[in-house]
Amino acid sequence: MEEGERARELDVAVRVVQMACSLCQRVQSGLVGRNREQIKVKEDDSPVTVADWGVQAVVSLLLSECFGSENVSILAEEDAHTLSRKDATTLLESVISTVNECLSEAPKYGLKCPLKRLGAQEILDAINSCNSSGGSKGRFWVLDPVDGTLGFVRGDQYAVALALIEDGEVILGVLGCPNYPMKKECLNYHQRYYRRMTTLSPPSGSWHKGCVMYACKGSGEAWMQPLVHDFGEYDQQSSARMIRVSSISDPAFATFCEPVERANSSHSFTAGLAHSVGLRKQPLRVHSMVKYAAIARGDAEIFMKFARAGYKEKIWDHAAGLVIIQEAGGVVTDAGGHPLDFSKGIYLEGLNRGIIACSGPLLHEKIINAHYFHIIIK
Image 1 (cartoon, rainbow, N blue to C red):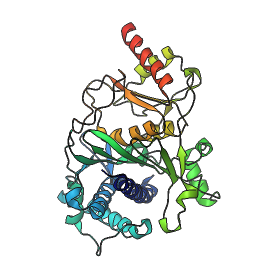
Image 2 (tube, helix red, strand yellow):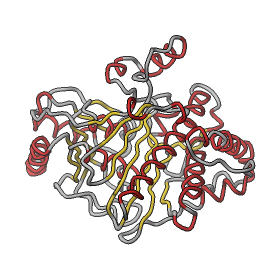
Image 3 (cartoon, rainbow, N blue to C red):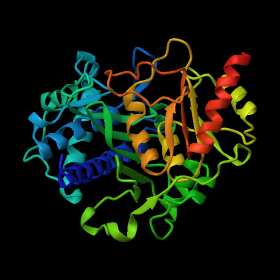
Image 4 (spheres, helix red, strand yellow):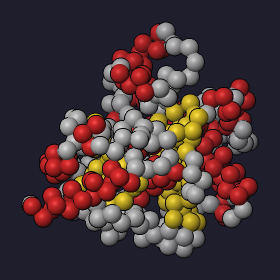
């Protein structure tokens, strides 16, 4: 793959994720506290919304338009089974409207929009076309349309995550975080209160806005730009900035992140490990891959996730975040210190108990060693 083509793929992916974030913002503003009929519950009891289906359709359609449908293979979280039911007419109409509204703005992002309004079958087909099974050979995109849907429906943190995998290796990743402001100080506000206040009196500049982070494998660089609603008016040179992980290597001064949900992670095990390694701060519990974003730009130093028995990690929950942290100078492995394996399909097979992401190798080694001794003691 030539460097120019890789750069084009990253550029398109960033623009597509920017559009997806705009879609999510519109849907979230209408969801919080109302429109509960736009939220459904999947078989695993996790929620799914109009935004999940809408983003998946938009990403599928735009990538196919840019690179040719014959060259695009996507592994994504959702399918259109629920939308295809006879009792889902109203829900489907909401998805159709949301997708068409988003696609109509594609020219603002330097992308092509459809010549005509898309109908139900075209949108259902776009969602269902994201049916790659992954594997160790070839190239495929990995998409989590709304990572952290529980946070999304509560008006809190969530992410749009898109990555490209080639022969089992993540080669680029884009992470859209609509509620994660460019400037860390803005996180001091309670998110929903802050969003209301900035609507009434928007701060100057772009630092209060959400952000999009992105990186290419092997570049040694990770970047962040604010959410953009018109690329024609966007000055990337002045608005985008390189991000780096924190230089903190002493666990006593480190901030660590863990998932909010208790359903698929063991907070008690994480707490025990945190104590044994000398972590003193309270954990930062954040929905979604925003945890990866926090480490990549130096807002936190450690992310630990230890799954409960029977839960299997899915590649779309980690692919984009992993490459961004790595290129920003951090380290991501399983709890045994082994690289995450994205070559086995939907799941991260062979995972040694959990996932540990750190801002640097020294801190990572301390966590891995502490985990080893913690296991022996238990």
